[in-house]
Amino acid sequence: MKLSKKGIIILAAFIVATLGIFIWQKSHSPEPEPVYEGKTLSQWVVLLDSNTVHKAQNEAAEKALQAMGKKAMPGLIRILHKRADPPQVAKAKALAVRFHLLRPAELQLAEFQYRAARACCALGGWHDVGIRAAIPDLTYSLTNNAFRTLEPFAWALVYSGPEGLSVITNVMATDPSPQVREAAAHSLWISRKIRTPEIAGALVSATQDSDANVRVMALLTLQSFAKEKDLASIIAPRVLRCLQDTNTQVRRWTVELLGRFSSFPEVGPALTNMLNDPDPTVRNQAERLFERKPRGVEK
Image (cartoon, rainbow, N blue to C red):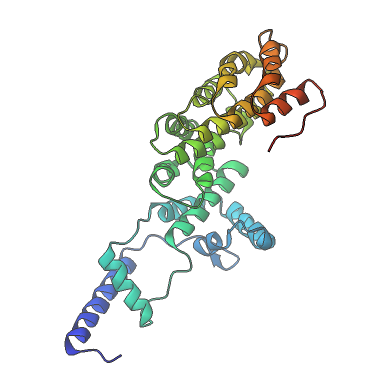
């Protein structure tokens, strides 16, 4: 399509603006990224896609991150700190890409940050690298963005230490988004180190969340806490009330959880009552605990 004179001027202005942005970014670029086996940190982050089909690629990326260690953190924080371009800047960049003045990004920003968060998990959770400096950006991503999954941001906060763990428990209790509260509850199973009375208490409180999915996730996470004998007195008496929940799945998973605390006097009778629950999935779960032959689930 032939452009008018005005169109050419506008296009030229966009391209000049883009080049100005590009030159400014280059002149204010941070220190070079660490390199491992010929690839930069960003290139390795791109390869960390979690797809099981790319198992060898992911393992290589995790090995690269381990080799970079704490040197990788400034670059990962820069990725997590990026924000979407203003509309006019985005439009100018798109035109520059169209006319081959800029290379297209390998990944959308949200996906790039998702993989950077996974890199933080690998460093902080599996290789004992301090990732505390990433807490502000991990928190922002967890509570402000709609990623395909919030899991790596929440996990990385747990792995970051007490400060990040405090963020998770606060988010689980107060964030307005049920998806965020659910992701926070889900993240608390990943490390035995955090199975403390304080965290168990926070999860028990989450079993009373206004959203049923959050309540279910809190009960599922408490399954791992039930292995710690010193936490039984915190969990068992306080989740009994969940047997009266209006949501079937909440009752079903409460029965499963309380089956681990049969030594408590009040638990046995409460579970016996669940044999008469109006929902067949709950009844069957109770019957399995009492080693009875389960009835067929009604349709």
